[in-house]
Image (cartoon, rainbow, N blue to C red; front, side, top):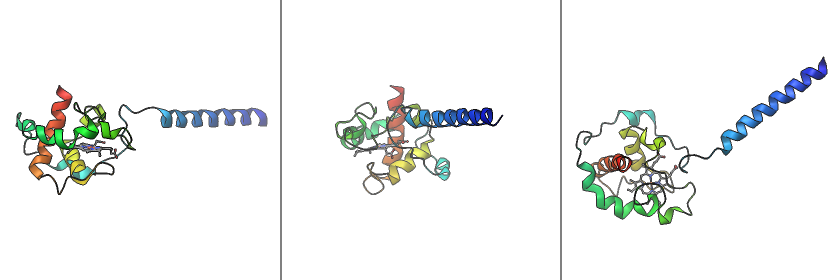
Length: 140
Ligand code: HEC
């Protein structure tokens, strides 16, 4: 009686540990951290929401500032990103794309090392246009 209870407990613990480990070990579709923007960020409204050409205005900005880490197509494979921990996010991944415009804007604004904050170096307009650029990358 005691032994069978004990055996069951051991099996349950083994299963629980196994599940935990498999979660910890499962690779993410991109390699950033689990960085999450605060819920209020979702309420920010993108002034370029309905502007299909807004992304074009920051094409050079993306090339000059972001490609080095996030790569030309946003796949997180830029040359300077290789040695970083966490790795630069794949901006076309579902994990990034399913976030609201406001959340992505908040991340560009605040940064999370090694991802810089662009609050001082880019205008609010440019940060919103970059959100559109990130949407554009996923639609390519
Ligand atoms: C020095 C390398 C570097 C540069 C330059 C850089 N990033 Fe990042 N970026 C990162 C890293 C690393 C992360 C992952 C941070 C994390 O997950 O904590 C990241 C994360 C992000 C995220 C958040 C993705 C998510 O987790 O939801 C966005 C959006 C982003 N970067 C956009 C940009 C844009 C746009 C530019 C150019 C203005 C840029 N980044 C420039 C390294 C960089």
